[in-house]
Image (tube, rainbow, N blue to C red; front, side, top):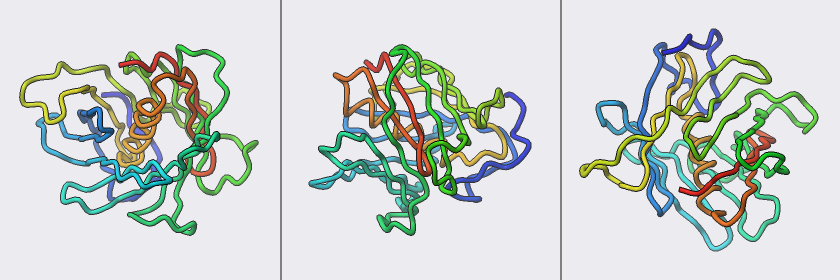
Length: 220
């Protein structure tokens, strides 16, 4: 494992920060659900679709199905903006971050800028950045515009018979003192955006006010 984050990174909740590096396995299925387990296949978090007539929605859940965060995107919107709320709330006062599509420059690379809730203006410097190749499962999440990595995807894992979903599995390494629920939520948003726009080459995301991203090579 790589060096831990010096300062704790907390976005969704302090209870999701542990003092040791964490490696998890993320399983996805065509229905848009995600299952997050540790390396011993013990379930840690779940992401389930709960769409409405007008919104594409994802719910991040504890093992016992208690809601952690609601992620929603207004259907038929040209902005590709995702909003994330605490628990299962959709109240404006409970919004903790959001996502916005950006213009693509390089289709083969992922480039995501993350702004936290206290950043009100798009011109403010971003707090986190995601770069790499989504199609190769080799994206990394950085602190701001720096080389300090707080989480990274480690590539695909062979699907076996006892896999719960069976479509795709990859490993995710979260550094020590980093909010792993926040990292999983970012991955869930990217996966949902990819899945809902398979024919598009350009996908964008924004967190806590404004994450901008471009994703290419989004096929399975």
